[in-house]
Image 1 (cartoon, helix red, strand yellow):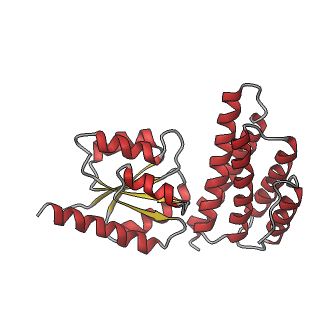
Image 2 (cartoon, each protein chain N blue to C red):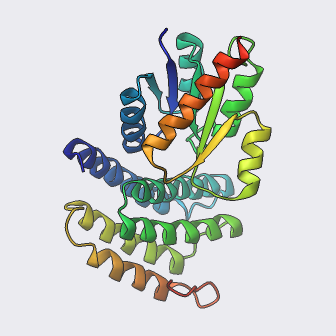
Length: 130
Length: 128
């Protein structure tokens, strides 16, 4: 991969993960409108991380972002993000940030983060890892 | 004749990938990173083809398409919509809303350039 492209990807993904974390922090707002906007922003960030990572063939990052996106879609449908649903996303963000230091290296920790993410979902929404 | 493409994409990574492929195919590319900025840029640049992402901050791709189709100066521009979703209803919504073509992400950049080329051919045919 072209070094300049990799640099742009790292920089953009770091920025999006930070924005996602900031949106999560705001998602507990009392005002329904602010909560909905925060959830939309979090969803947009996760969705873009997924699509961009897929395009660059960083499959493990794309799968982890897809899991976050699914969780945020459910939160938007229900209108709130529970603490139980927030924690796995925060842990996934941390794994993503650590991996972004060297995306050409091993993605093992992202795979572990994805497995942990699935196990951390409430049992009614847990999906098999495929 | 300069073949002008306006790319509306909020992801710098995707914008880099797409712009590189289009420039390599001989297109002149201007990039806008959100819907509102894109509408202003389109009125200034008067592109022949617009490639836009469906999901954008602020105005989304559907709304930008709707506004372009209502603009007397820009209504004839060819529009290609990029989407991550393969859901039929999203594609139908895009086409019904005025997009001429769509592409699912991830895609091969060379294929995107060829599809843009095809839109340019349609412009040439319709102006004969």
